[in-house]
Image (cartoon, rainbow, N blue to C red; front, side):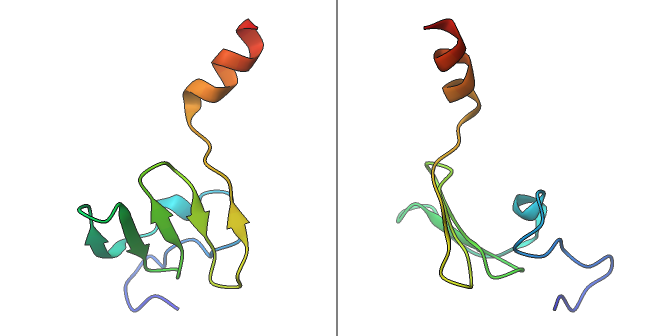
Length: 67
């Protein structure tokens, strides 16, 4: 768990992206969050349990509803 207060949201929480960044590698396109999530610059995520969250950019919903 997080060593700081308030603790970061867990990797399975809807707001998991709000966790603190532990390591940032913009040259490689990813960051490691305190809850173990690897967040990619295309908004895709790799969860600590091996799960994958597909990229989910806010513009995707607008493009789908406009079509």
